[in-house]
Length: 389
Ligand SMILES: *Cc1c(COP(=O)(O)O)cnc(C)c1O
Image (cartoon, rainbow, N blue to C red; front, side, top):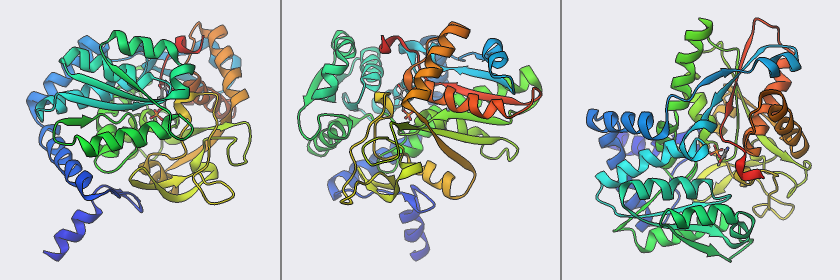
């Protein structure tokens, strides 16, 4: 008995990170969610339905594209781009939303809530809710609703109700606080569709499961094209969902180097970046343990990134574990490096990336440069750049 309860407590942990640090009401809702997820995860009917939606609605598999011009420009390893930007709604976030919407339906929940920063997860959530005929409440910082007006319009067009959150800075962290509050109040009827591999257990595990389609496809595609595994796989890290989705299916392939790129912003001082794995320390945020950014007064730091989707002071717990265990490395790309990569990819390949993804391109190019032409780097292009115009 004792053994079991200890194991239960450890479930949802990645080394010292993760867990479920929440009030009791919320803990029981999360336990219900976890049971629901465990039940359907390997269920054939669920798997088949998800596979059909991925294929016919999202447009999977997304191509693995050999970026010949960029490779030539950089002058090192072969660079491949995993084209998640070609998914329906223009980013990887839809993978997770379709998975969670199927789960919500299975659990009999018809009211969906979600937080959003730049609006990408809000749009993906509103899309899934339209598809499954569910009520959709989006929480978005007031500042963000003004910065990202087009996405607010898209969400409303899809039938969602957008709640502008004026508390705090009026950005993503405040939107998460508000969504969690709503969830506690309406827990019987409501499903909280979290948008990244963060939050209390079971979200990091569940989001990884739905996003790992990225790495599964990339692994098969590169074996087909090159008959070997890549030397490096690279992704940008905000909350860390597109990164863990690419990384997870390669973690046991010891010869594959794993590299996450955090937003280095304008510098290494508190408030100038959003790179907790690089500049933060272990701490607690939004119900889980991970690396967190703190300011001079040991308060959770304000953050900055040119890419709104990376602008968060915490990071998915599994990335903390991958960093500490040495299995993955994490570095930064600055605002300027991301902008340079954004322009270069647009001009050389005719592909306009999201600014988030441009961080991965910048980091991937740096690595590729020092490798030889027989080596392979796969960069996850997590989203398209239309929203940056
Ligand atoms: C939201 C977003 C990200 C950051 O989120 P992760 O959970 O770290 O993947 C990255 N790229 C794009 C295009 C996004 O929309």
